Image 1: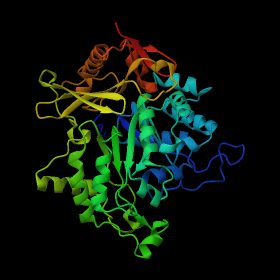
Image 2 (image 1 turned 60 degrees about the vertical axis):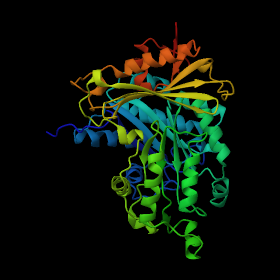
Image 3 (image 1 turned 180 degrees about the vertical axis):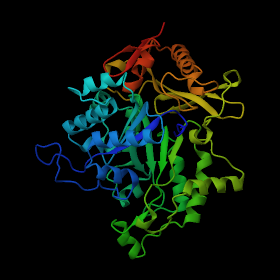
Image 4 (image 1 turned 30 degrees about the vertical axis):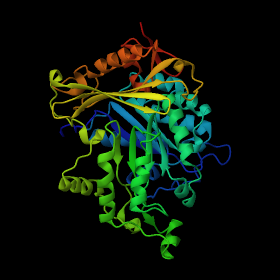
Length: 454
């Protein structure tokens, strides 16, 4: 029997893809319209699995859970990552059906409707502790916020790509940097965790302009997580014609390593770098970088320079033994628009991150969300404790996840919220973590869990 694999946070990510252009008529299943979503290739691992299961959400989730369990990987805490294109562009009935089927796969049984599927998941063997969708900045508006919460969404990924309007227009992105700023502000006001995609080497960019563009990310956007997707030239892309005419030059691998090694140490301690390259098989790349080990190459270059990255991923404790009495508290405070953010963390003596909480304190001028639960409330946007991956209810000596850090972080957030005059504290909770918060005094609202501070 294989020993269970250990993850950094006890959370297993399951990726599913939506069907491209569903519902051309009245049928939401569209069995005759199977092709890869735009910007995905059939030999990418996640896309290949989706194609194998005909993009059916139940089959995708079920098969992935079975595969993980077969190798001894814990599957009791699942972050569901829904990819495949602009989520908000799909019909609402398809969205609701898709999410419901994902929950039914995690529950191991069918349900009458989405609400009942979510309720069952609160005590299921595979609990959803995070639900992620991807969309465009120009598709985020007030109307979508309540809908996303109804579905159970807790995190939103957006393809910002650049913060330079000239480059966005030249690359026909169809949105502006201001669209991205407004979208991040609205999502933050509603408590969502924000992931931005940034793409160096766009048409019209240079390594120097990319360095300047990356610096803009921390001026009014300040995402919680980022994905760095260097532009990769594919034969079926419109950019291919520019390359053939000599109007576009892909960065060489060495140039790309230098660029990312320059900018990575600038990333604030409150942000996590999820990726530094898209998982595209090198056989599809016509010119430019083909190395899928780019992250390792960058870290080797950082080590050679004697510099370090302080992003969340680089500081995670990674399963090491935690001595709670030795942990140090840190409150990293920064302002994004009209909101003050508190990144509360517990750190080891060697500055490894054992756990953190994101607390938002909206101020005058914060975007209006139209969500009653959030009226006059401070917002917990994320609580995350690292350590060994253990099943729900299990304990291990020195495991950060089972040393009460989450409870202490919440109490700390309550104190800060009260000090700043807030009488209510809301938390954006995934379906599978609702009971964790109700045990800590939070009451169920319409879309959030809320606690009155006394």
